[in-house]
Amino acid sequence: MKPISTATTSKGFLRHPNFQAGFTLLEILIALALAGIMLSVAVIAFSDNDAAKLKNRAHQLFGLMQVAQEESILRGVEIGIRVKQNGYSFLIYDGTRWNPLQEHSLLKDIELEEPIEMYINVEGQEALLANSADEEDLGDSDGEESEKETKPPQIFILSSGEMNEFTVTIGLDRDDARFYRINGNYMGEITMEPAMEGHYRHDWDLELNAPF
Image 1: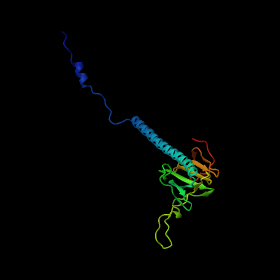
Image 2 (image 1 turned 135 degrees about the vertical axis):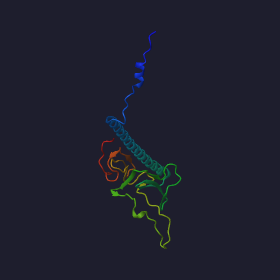
Image 3 (image 1 turned 60 degrees about the vertical axis):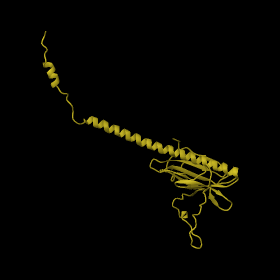
């Protein structure tokens, strides 16, 4: 028998792989590129999420206006909508004053989440009421404190279905702003336009751009 040579085997065991310590410049650049892509995707997803919320809120407002109009006609009452920067509420007229509309399954107070905000223009007059003086509590003639007075609506819906003219914008309060615009006229027609590029407060009367 031939003797088994162990020389090759020994050399094999003594040979060690040549590992590199740390990362190469190429690996670091790839990692940075991947991190940048992931960050941009996250920003886009966040923006799309806000845009989706805005779309839902705009369609909700448009739908509730139509419900309020139908309710006004069916019940033979006057219903109003009080618009604020961060939401809106529904009121009913009892013949002498406006009161909150209560115990209705749909027409309830709506509060908007940031960065969604609202603006209303009534018959050409600005009516954004955030932090306005008339929001303060009023005292009676004896100097005693009274309950906070219910503020009148800016949108009036009559039992005939007619209403005052108004433009309500609801949009995103940020740099890459967009908004929806809802219009009402004396004939009781309520229309909503597609999303527009611009700020909901400053561009409420902007010409309609191509929808996106």
